[in-house]
Amino acid sequence: MRRSLSRICSFSIHEDKVTILDRLQKLADQEKESLSHMIVVSIEEYLKKHEPGNPQKPLVVFGAKPILTCWKCGGRFAHVIHVEFISGLSAYLCPTCLEKEKAKGPYCTIKKVLK
Image: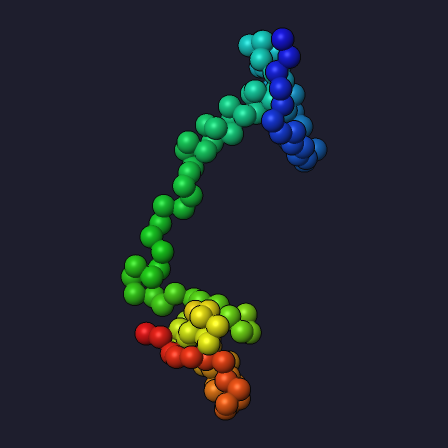
């Protein structure tokens, strides 16, 4: 009975690490398993050890200000202003983009500044 494949992946191995793949293939042959199975098992073991990633607390826990992206210019800032546009869109603007938008006078599309 043939197994169905759900995904085929390819990867590269630096030439000084090729022996690792050879050793894994030898072990797979001894255990009568496929190389694919051995790779998936290795990935699962790695994920069990390392997920969900860096266990360190983010700096905002210690009082650092989060860095947010200005919706208009795409710049990243520690200080942004939360606004609501006439369209109903709620977004963050840097002080410069907020002033540019306000300078449009009657054509300004900001409905209100949110807290």
